[in-house]
Figure (cartoon, rainbow, N blue to C red):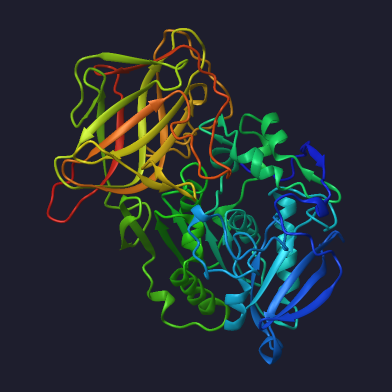
Length: 565
């Protein structure tokens, strides 16, 4: 239950001088100015008053000349990364090709050089307490969502706007859309959330109750360029290891969203945006909503020219004039992957797919296989968490082509002989018929990733009964239930959604470990890690007999074939 009025003690920190920001373009200053270049009319540092009088600074891009004088539809890219933080490229591993974006493109935001010549205005923000905007920065939650509401309503009433405002952008620029759309600003006509988490605890801070230790410290460190103070997200995470009022303050009333929405998710952002984007699609009540799910690199997919054209078709439909193109789109469009860079899209009507046949693959510790029938004989295996390379593996060989699209669940009977907790890391992997590892795209820039991932701290095994289903366990994370050394317990681990085609003879492998299974990132970019575990000594996995350890998989019946793997 959301209790937005509950008082909280938010840990704040002093801002760092914006003019000294590391890794950003030189700050151009705060003077109001109007520039005309390359067919753009650029108005910088417009002060916009929020409802409490605090003023934030925004930049507005319009077409130069007569085309920019008439009322235009507006797209907002709301971001704390600096409205001046613009580049014509990203990291090479992101695979954003030369010429796809211009030097005016703010990080993860729509490119003015594309949109303005096509009859749109673009607005970039420095939100409250970031850079040289007034006030203190709040990272998500009620204050930021209200500020975004106020900006939308200010923009929608300007003489250069036609009264129709849309929002687009990746990651943070999507998270704010989940926050502001439930407030129903009258001038917000359409949203385009493109891969952004919606559950701050389960998808951002604590995966399965295990704190993320690499991406968040680095990314949140870049949110502290301010003349005042900013919310210290990392310190607040450390102060709130369980799901409590702090995390409730970040919740969004997704069911209240009725704004038309073109939502893009990916199977490849395991550990950051995959789950939350799909959960938001399921929960919002927009009558006009579309979902596209790909298996590629997120920035590549956002800026890919044909996808930008699709964004334009969507916004033209809802911000300028309605036509027959967008209503004819399939409501759900899924890429079914075979490996990194190889997959095909298929139109669907709903998510998750109604025709899914959930099937159990039972773990057998005797031969480390996954069997379609229950295993009668009890057995166990163990791996030593004090050895970084140690892990358990279970393999299933498909006897026919099989598509697995949707949610998986790993039910395990586990015990630890020497301690009262254990951290479980799970990867679903694919191997070809020759036993060679088949890689998938993941985490924005990697090309050697898994089919899907899951995590659970065993003391967090209690489920939220109201939200859980047989195929998707949702853990409450409101208390810890310590283990008794030597006593087996059953845990249900949520595996994040995926869509993969396994050919006859190919293998699905479940890897279970006491630490991160994937640890290498390209270049020096933020990357998913969990480096503070509670493991000590061996983990024991029990299978067979009364220990019904199994992987639940979402089989999509193929035409003319049986429904079981």
